[in-house]
Length: 195
Image 1 (cartoon, rainbow, N blue to C red):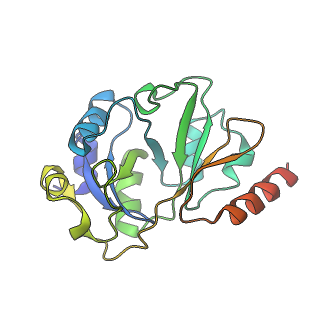
Image 2: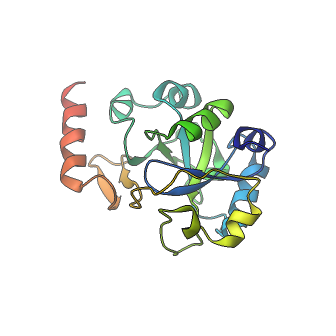
């Protein structure tokens, strides 16, 4: 079964992303997200990001997305944005008014799989608190064997995305990662000035 077929059938897959190996599932149905959470061992109260293949696909899913946010993408950022329509409530954890979004620079095989379903819910392919997997062998065997498809993308950078909170008046860094904080602030400044 290909990764695209597995995603379409609602089953989780392991894919190489631009930062680390990720565990991904089709995001439009709560059941496929629940399967991802169970395989990872993630509590359902924890939020998980919506990942689109490109900005147009993300805007189609979240039409109220601020266009200044779209200017920050694609990148190695996870952006926590307002979710006034409370879309994808099974991805938001305990905060239905916010949603994490990503548009990474995807490896070709991952891009094709994500485009096949429009977007995925994705998290790092590790157990909670585990090391970020930069090689396929770093992904725990339980996750590899439980996934419906596994794509080997070789060695990845190994640093997860930088998580930025854009739900308040002043942006905040929730997790340091692949994009340094000063670069995030510079890009946010450019996005604000262009509006």
